[in-house]
Image (cartoon, rainbow, N blue to C red):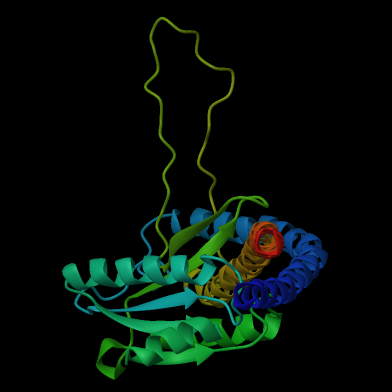
Length: 307
């Protein structure tokens, strides 16, 4: 009887968890479509401003901080985008693992990384381990707004533009999860500043091949009022747009990861309930069989005694 009560108690508690998991999955399913749409719609604008920055910095010799900072400054800023809530599978743990790897690589390179964390789960993790954190942001990681993107970009811009003597940093990194599709989300490490110039590979012409009708020609730019002022205006917009895009794609990844995790948890809970129900039925059947055996044995004993 005690075994049957234990099985019934476990079935009841597992059924309650199954309802919670199913509700979380339904909530995530209702949010994922909008989160994915917002992330995909923001990507072309971020890519466009990145291409514009690439085109500007590739023009001539530029000594602006957007492309280079003082080389004798070992301090770098690392921003980790985690989540506020759990029940999202390995979402936050994957980001923390990649962040720890990046910090270790920077330490080996002689850098002095300074950590910035977005998301309550990441903040709790690093505070519990007494890790120094320069600044934190919490709230609405699954629905980030422009305000939090502005706050983060302003803080990082301030750290990047300060001189080394005043505690400024020479590089900016961001660790986030890129939304690929509903099943695949990949953790990425992006160096936002200084901007790395991506040069197109030029193919050596074959003398036996016919020359193409048109050739790629590098565009010429005229800057008004000056190149320095143009880059000063572009830099904050570039940082804000990249951070906002990372926040949006991270939010879509978090929601997709939570939906997948809750779907798996719901299936596991149902399988566990089925397994416990079979064990309960087997225990009940064994108890009934034992009682019948005892009754039949007692009846046989009484019959023999009467004879």
